[in-house]
Length: 363
Length: 272
Image (cartoon, rainbow over all chains, first blue to last red; front, side):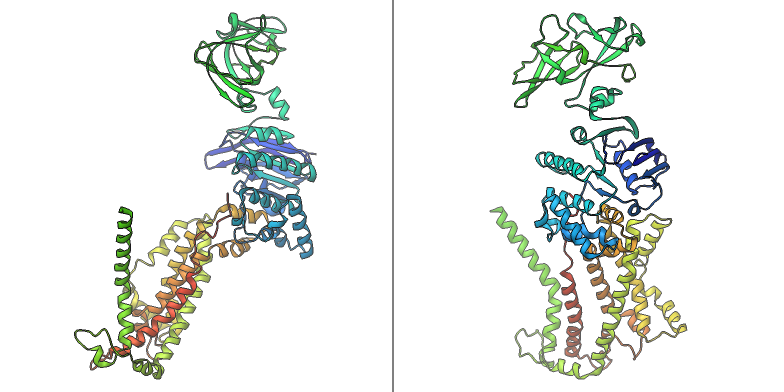
């Protein structure tokens, strides 16, 4: 049985539907990430697991216990807030011990657990300081420490790294991953950052407008996105889309026509070929990292007009226009200088073209 | 150049304001140290030989000492009660949604809109019926009605400024509603509580109208005692000014002590 089970959960504020019949589960020790654009309901869902938001309809159970209407403290979950939410008038030590004091834990036990958590997070020298004397990264560690000492069944993280600068963020990301490996506990993590989601998650839940768009491993979502939303959200830079017409096909291939293809058409291998009607519209998805400048002879390629290039150091992000005016992004190794309007031939691998139907669903 | 000019204007303005507000105190204190002939001199004398005669006179008068004690008892009790009752009410108004919340809020404020003298007669009759005239309790109760709205008002605002994530974190940490108030909101609300305590104390200490109406001889507060020196036949300015100085002292000391807690940024470091 799943360790964390969310069953047909609904959240409504008055007439406003925030979470629309969401169901998902997590195994013990799993790292699950909720990802989606702001306002998609991911934080609300997390707060419902914590017990900070009432559940309008549906059920939540943790470790076999139904907790839908159980007080937050009795759920044995710990949460790391986006704002850290440290008690400003208490020292680091008191902050970490607060939950244990509330649970009337014996003092020697509190000392032991705080010391242990401080050692894990390398904040032993900060224990007597007040939160205002700490840097952002240190506050983040204290917030995590406060969660660790309570030895919860479930760790909940609400965008914990969004207040940190880029360098600290990637450093803390690695630490959270290590913490998960060392503690082996179940973690649910909310972020709008797809890189955090990809690097941390065992499984990702993509949410949009209160609904689950797709649940799967990072590789699943990257390789087999269920729709254009997931395809566009996972991967950086974003996937490019071309509106193409199906002109012909065999049992295993489809021939698509689009003015950007060299020769006006391209043949794409797909198992779904028999199910696609000829003459219909499809959306062809192309990942920037699967495109190469200067296509070779005979291969499938796009003929584009260059716009400009952004130098990333070891690679460049090249922007180019299709004949019908859409801008595509290409991730190219090395440094490139692209003059506006210069003709570009871009090679694509037909086997790595994602196909979606008119409604955006994967074919 | 213009910055320097700006500073001069700033400085001059500050001196004018200080002179305006502090002159009455200066006049009161110096007058209390003048003898009768210097007091009534016209034009006023600025240089004189100070005398402590008026102070000797009032400290020998048991009425003054006891009136200061009555005032202390009443103002301290009122302030404590106003905080004990007002702070939890403010917490409820700041953090809970309940039916009639905005009406209750308005009712608290509207208590301060009524001119005190309008209620003087009804309150007198009420106190007479209850047998409370000339007691500490009657003044404590009536001052409480005036002070509670101020405490609730200031503290609600203070508690609202405390990030609600702190309350949520405490809930997850297993703190009860009371402990969240006691361990989180109260310590973080100290600046607001200090301000409302000062207002409450000063109001109770200086109040004259109700003290005059509701008490006789048993419980005479300091402002009543000071004014009682004025009779139809004499105006002992020196004695009145010395009493005034003695009355102002405790409340000044109290305000100075409490003002140390009126600091900003107490919640710094909680978030971000």
